[in-house]
Length: 114
Image 1 (tube, rainbow, N blue to C red):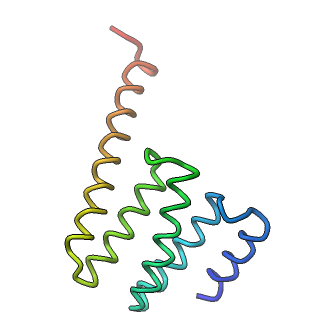
Image 2: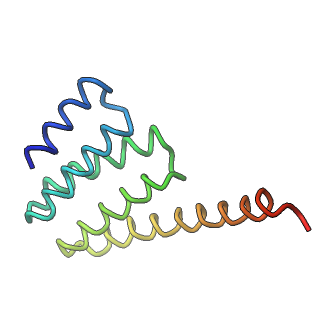
């Protein structure tokens, strides 16, 4: 836990609050709290990571999907099923678009059009 807290502190100072690596530190710290059973703290940090990723990386980024999944999973652990469902469905929806876009781009850029 100390390592994740220290990494967050350093990234905040060096990179600033709104940086993808700072969001990663928030996510890691939140995940650690969740694993220790402190779901409230876990949600606090994972939600912060999600907000930064939405702003900096956008909705269609895999790291944002991971954050939606992590927040949803944490809500599931505390039996807040409706909230969990909302976040998990959002993660699935975005991931589906990312995969579709990847497949469309791969079909035309790698193989060309036949």
